[in-house]
Image: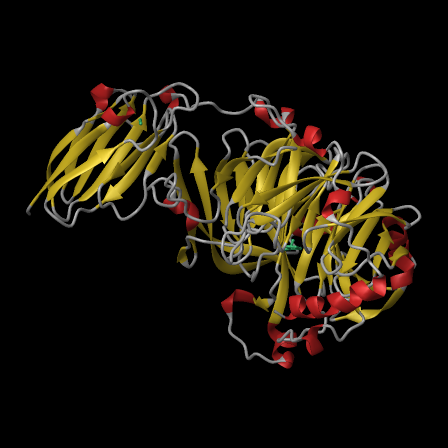
Length: 638
Ligand code: CUK
Ligand code: CUA
């Protein structure tokens, strides 16, 4: 772990140099913190906080300001708790060109936007390891779509979106050779064969459906994070890079040689024109697009065999590089769309670029040279200014819409508030400990909600009761209403949280789906009433059309099954009421349970290996007669 090693060794020295006074927690906690985070029993939180689940592969939903966990949304990892990835209906969601993949690493989230503001329709999430992007529907809080990205390795700079959700953009963190080619692993081969790709995923305005519109093939340099321009800079997209040395091994000596890496500025409107004009190249490939159908309550996979690519070294004038000090990580655009903040992890300053100056620099051809065929703008020509000595290890920046920026500092473990206009540090608060991302509700939009900043920390040591070597992950809520930031609350999170999003509750809560209309259920194996239940044999396959309603499962005695039969239990939940799921589990099924929502049909496949009697039951305590929701399956010898 090169970076963390480097940063941690730098930490002690850094703190000494800085004379950073670590205040005690007590003095940093606001006096009225309890009343400001207390949400009385029966009351709702003010905001939904969607938090990436890191290596859990899922997304967690918390209430703010209470920090209460409201839901874990399964996205990229199987979830035996509700059958996601185990039921026949959801298995296709995790299909990829390399087969079924039951896990991933989830880092960033983006709420859909209209006119640069969160609209509460969808949430997009990245899979970092096996490059994919998911769309979650916020009416039903359900993963509806997962699209795989070809020509990508480490889908980290993802998903970030344009101000009207025209595109979700995904950049490769690990440059790889295009088209699954192999290559020797040395610097010369990296330079020659490795490429970074930026995928532009088009989003259908009405359905939200994703489609890889085109990919920009860039020289290998490892895209790390990114943001779309907004307002005046709408039409541009900015990525940070950290391996412009093009080293195949990132041992310290290699990747941090250079004084500056780049921010890659992409004029996506121009790229769009090139695509429309037929200038993109068709490339044969293979990737999966998995969609969950609301009417059949089932997912299907589609295999796509072609992708359009643009080469910015051939088609000029839509990709420019801005030098940015020392291995930038975060790359953030302020609410006005005028300023682009780079955060060099190894730099002791924060460079802020001005969009107008950047545009002028292109007009004036204020270039310092080329990098692998791409024009490099002069640092000073695009620079608005630098925040001097802000702290150590700057990572990410969010905004409050009042002209202030909040940057997280991993090494000096703090949030620093500074003024965008005059680049003065205004305030700093310690985080416990080593903050990664931070999030101001709406802080990435044109109109931040402000009020709070939440720190998502990398180290939890001593914040919660010890639970062995592995501690819960830690988030911290601060008030940013006054001039000084105030710590209000610690709350534990699942997985490892990276980026998060938050949105006022009103934008989501009233549209929440309470149950699915059974009359509209078009599942091929639905039993829309108890009369439609049956057991059907087709050779080796047995299909059980079963219904669940308080308080029985129908049929509840199943005979005629033989060892080795593939038994499909299709459970339709007949309830038409809120919060009445029924569960289904059968003895020795080596998969998971099903948790079937009202009006939905879900299927568990089970192949019994032994003769005997197999009890099955409802797992969700649904009524006074919940215990009576049970039955038996008899399995005979072949
Ligand atoms: S990364 Cu986690 S702290 Cu993957 Cu956005 Cu910066
Ligand atoms: Cu249905 Cu318990």
